[in-house]
Amino acid sequence: MQKGIHPKGYRPVVFKDMSVDYAFVTQSAVETSDTIEWEDGNTYPLVKLEISNMSHPFFTGKQKLLDSTGRVERFNKRYGRKTK
Image (cartoon, rainbow, N blue to C red; front, side, top):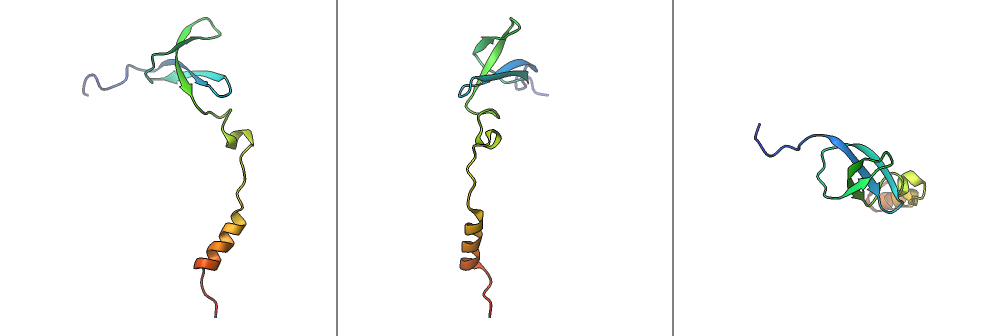
């Protein structure tokens, strides 16, 4: 193995979704310069996220459904087999 190219190892890291103020602790090898004091009184590295399962439209139920029926009909009308 080459020296100096591998991460130092797994350690507890806090991931925080900034849009909904949701945070969780998990093991990671990600490098970050930010830190946060967690509920247990310990200081952990902090990774700021733009989106997580708490803010993603698919998981929150706020996803817009597309009109797939109309799209399929238009596709078949344009490119479908010609009937005699």
